[in-house]
Amino acid sequence: MNIILIIADTVRSDYCGCYGNTWVQTPNLDALARESALFEQFHAASFATGPMRKDVFSGRFTFTYANWGAERPANEITLVDVLNDHGYTTAFIGDTNNSPQYRQGFDYEEIVTGWAAGLDEIPEGVDLPADPGKLRIPMGRIDRIVRNAMAWDGEEEQRAARTMRSAHKWLEHQVSEEQPFFLWVDTFDPHEPWDCPHYYIDAYDPGYEGDELMEPAYESAGYASKAEIDHMRCMYAGKLTMVDRWIGYLLDGVRQMGLWDDTAVIFTSDHGFYHGEHDIIGKVKLDRAGKICGRWPLYETICHSPLLIRVPGEASNVRRQSYCQPPDLMPTILELAGAPIPEAVQAGSVLPVVKGEHDSLREFAVSSHTYVQDAEVRSPTSFRTPDWLYVYGGDEWGHELFDLRSDPGETTNVIDENPETAAQLHEGLLTFLRGVDCPATSLGARREFRPVARTDVPYVKLI
Image 1 (cartoon, helix red, strand yellow):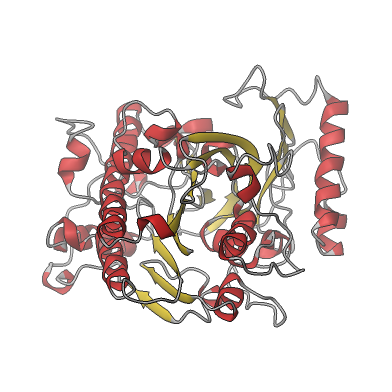
Image 2 (cartoon, rainbow, N blue to C red; image 1 turned 30 degrees about the vertical axis):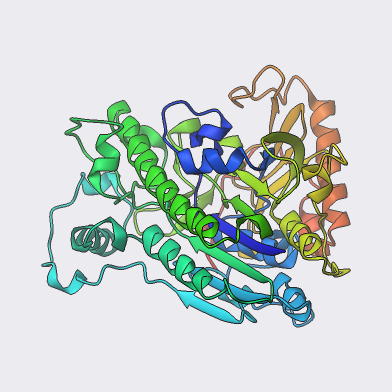
């Protein structure tokens, strides 16, 4: 069986029609969902972009031992290693260069540039779309982003469009091949900057004339007005709709080439984005020099991603409630391929859940910033069950507990009223960490139950 894995960066499940959204247009993802098993409880494990891809291709919870730029452990077997040995042709086509050490071994690799061809023709010193104090800095980066948006020569030159077109072209050469293929397609869109053609944005917020926070500052949300935040959401929605169009282009090509009945398709994302929820904008806290100075808790808004798994001849248009996470994708893909699953894999295949043979893979989800990103700071980690969200705040945030039965929006911290429940969930987190061989130093540092954040936290060093 052929397998296509599509990862689109920063897709919030609650913006997708197939997940219940009623105002954002995602017709192609919705159509794919009607032929797929849709997972209602797919949550990030290692946050954010690069760490998620490490999880996918190692089948491990890498936040416990790997920082963003760390080399692959010498003995770590990746998804592509196994598929190559099992007779698959493997290809990566994408416009994001995160975690290149986990792309080693592909038979074909194509990096699609994220910058417009005519950028050098745009003059320096262009007008910014908003007050500089509301935009992510450094200003040189913002200036280049704005100039880049001016240099796009039509929608087909956007990242997602070029990536999907390149993937389509590669597939055209596979039609006559007898060897099965694994194709990983990875687009940075709809990650900010939200610089898609304005007709996508105008469809959601016609006539808007205020500041456009197309690359907003990663700070507490107080700097932005309600109208600016609403428009920010519309800019994001517009870019997601554009991405949906080009995913549809690729999937339609799979059908037209006669590959559809022999090809499994998996669509997912790495994380979401705070558009003012919990009084936060962004993914982490950045100071005005653009450096990380704090990591925020991983609430539902930012760690609940879409996961659609379409397997020819298996269950379609079904919704699965089982918790699953990015490390589960490696064993799932290997089971689809009929390939062996390495002993070092820490996750499980969700294929039995797709088929309806099992109801659940696990009863909780753990989402975390990377533990080794800064040895001096314990980062926030979320431990989620059907009834509770427990936030181990570490040094940067206070401990929190949310009763998801009465508070699905995670707005009211009830840890003071439920100390025994919080303690049990804290122990559950430690048990999980021991089970995935979390290094002793990191595990020991998290045995302490900290009710409040430290007041002397140093700047987090992005390694």
